[in-house]
Amino acid sequence: MVIKVFLASSSGSTAIKKKQQDVVGFLEALKVEYTPLDIACNEDNRMWMRENVPSEKKPSNGIPLPPQIFNEEGYCGDYETFFNAKEDNLVYSFLGLDPPPGSKEALQAEKSAVKENGTHVEETSTEENLDKSRSEEVPVEERNGKAHREGEEQDTIEEVEGEATEDRAVGLEEALAEGEEEEAVEETEDAEARAGEYEEEEEADEDKEEEELRQLEEEDEAEAVEEDE
Image 1: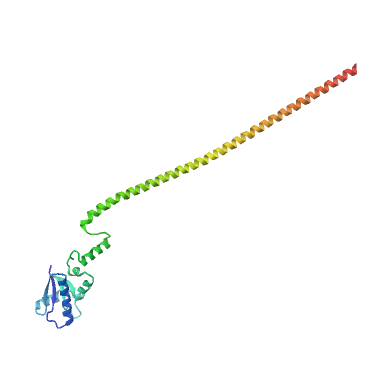
Image 2: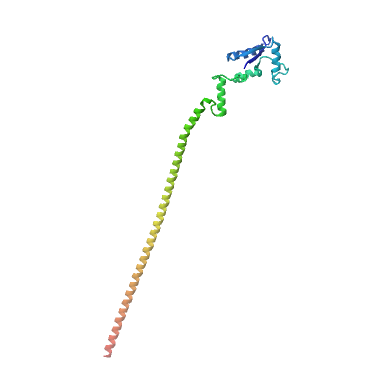
């Protein structure tokens, strides 16, 4: 691809001369090959430039002024657009050229690609990044598996402790129930024992009363016999 710069070697405008020098000097500093085409001494160059500058880029009078820059047949821009591209470190993009490795524009393009995609666009490092990501995935899964197992063990411990607590509660309830049953049995036995003792006392009292009655009858019979005699 050939960069074409249309110039006016015999222009009487100091501003145009300064702009032309600025464009040419910057291209030479970047070591970009270009072809200067003089429109002041060559009518064909002047006509070709006027015909190929897009109408929306032409001034109100329809006559574009130098410098005008092309890449082969494609229009790049005038001095103003060139100056803006230079300020933004985008001259190679402005010219339709690939920036050389290590240049500011190349580094800026890489940073922009990283910001847009979130990853480096270098193809040579793709496999390395994949291998690295795969190697990092295994420890993560192991850590996740370990954490999952620890969580299950903790749940099991909590379940066992919960069951043990429930068992202790049930055991206490059973022990209390057994204690209450034993107390009830003991009270029943005591009541039965007291009832038995009361019955024995009543029987003893009845026997005593019967014995006293027999003694009184015997005494009455004895007195009756003495009176008869």
